[in-house]
Amino acid sequence: MRKLAEQLTSREIRAGSLVFDPDTRILHRGDSTWHLRPKEAALLVYFIENSGKVLSREQIIKDVWETDYFGDTRTLSVHVCWLREKIEEEPRAPVLLRTVRGVGYRFEALDA
Image (cartoon, rainbow, N blue to C red; front, top):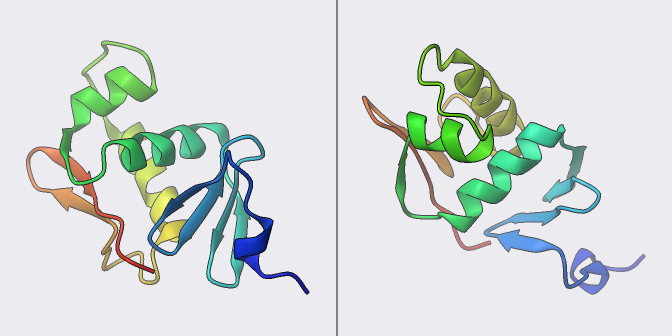
């Protein structure tokens, strides 16, 4: 059986223990594998590209949903919850994708 590291293509993105292929939307974390929904995939790439930055909810909605609508942001909360279920060891105690109270979120890729 080939190791995951040997299977990496140039399009795959690594962030800590995560390996993500944006073309297939396949995410690997340890021995677990998921096929992300399109918006989950877009969010993950966005968070990885902005790793370490505090991102406001409004900015995320504008950039990922490509809209200036700043009303109800529960859609973002739901998508973040779904994403955390896949990227976090303990989704209720997130380490990678943290909430910044009153602002938005910050993604921190930890070393694998």
